[in-house]
Length: 253
Ligand code: ASP
Ligand code: MG
Image (cartoon, rainbow, N blue to C red; front, side, top):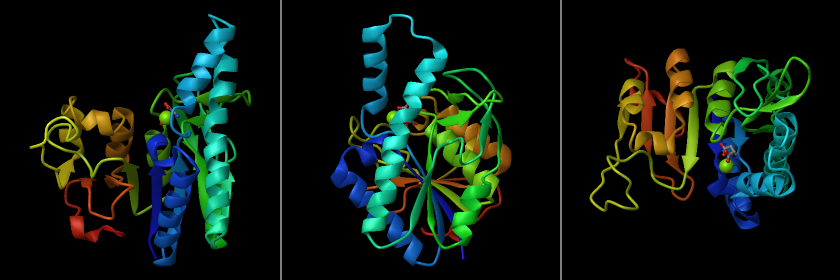
């Protein structure tokens, strides 16, 4: 049985219908016999909207309160997604970053992960449940909530995958993987089937639009295979692999 971490970004969970669609996909992966832990971002433009609201009230909002506010976005999507999975007939349990054991330093708005101890996540997985974890957030040594910087859920997903010893970290987005150029702008852009970490880190122009660079660095450091794919199709996307790992050895292709 494989352990798969799936990360869904804001565009994949933008409204109730999308959340139901994503839930079905997660349930499918579970019913194929895998353990599934999910990391989710805030719905659609929620994070931007929260920032706008903050600045409409205070032009210089305290960093601690900003992070308290921003972590709310992922709490909405994680609990709704757990409900949608429940409605689709499987057990799911959602966790904030803090509940999932994401300890960070104290840099509000740009915190770094210091350790991940996903004891409670592991427990519900062992009980046959799907775990849903709020991306982009953790807790510092004072017990205050922190965020990892914009786009930080990718890094949360890789960090969770590493801490759980997952077989693959699947990053779901709205395109079929990483392309030689942005396929929405350049029609002749080609999907890259397999790519090493180093090459993505060098591809500042297209690779980094799809994946946060910190997430790739984290994956490279711990040799965690990534599969960047579309939440709208079941096609294979782009595999980002450590040297020597055969693409066919990954689960859920
Ligand atoms: N919701 C956060 C953001 O919009 C984190 C993420 O999407 O990865 O930056
Ligand atoms: Mg977002």
